[in-house]
Amino acid sequence: MSMETHYTAILGQLGEDVNREGLLDTPKRAAKAMQYLCKGYQQTLEEVTNGALFSSDNSEMVLVKNIELYSLCEHHMLPFIGKAHVAYLPNGKVLGLSKVARIVDMYARRLQIQENLTREIAEAVQQVTGAWGVAVVIEAQHMCMMMRGVEKQNSSMVTSVMLGQFRENAATRGEFLGLVK
Image (cartoon, rainbow, N blue to C red; front, side, top):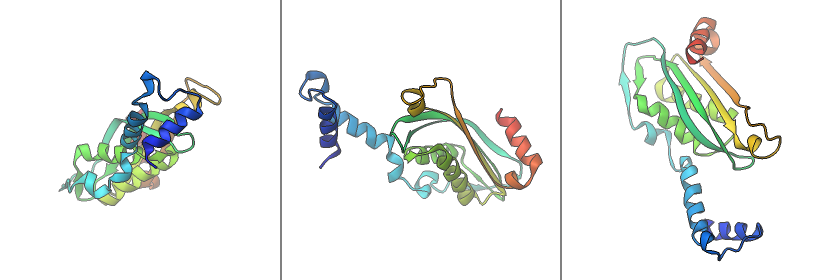
């Protein structure tokens, strides 16, 4: 059964008239939207980084801040929206700037919880770069908490993962956290 057929059934179960004018193409549009929102399942780390790893003798922190992200929580399939800050300490290689954002997008475009998303991004950057350390902080607002349940409109969730020197060295971690504030 196609995703479009399932959306038609869902609309009917909600009590909607699936034949009314405004809903005639909704199952097709909803299926297409869901495929786009979950396109990360069709991507691999190798594809999104596309060999954009370059030799460098820079050993200072590389930080990409405020990478917007859009994901769907795996519990309610409702959006969570926020920003990621990703840093790494190069070990002879630097990653093309846009590739950091592409890594964030690839993992965000899967059904997720924010805690796992943060770790997946950090581990992917570590795997690709072989960096001395990687740090990721994500701050997001969750529609499953805002639109339903406790309905708290001003809450946000912050998660962090520190690998290598960011975990072991308080000064390095402090520098990163100071830069992302």
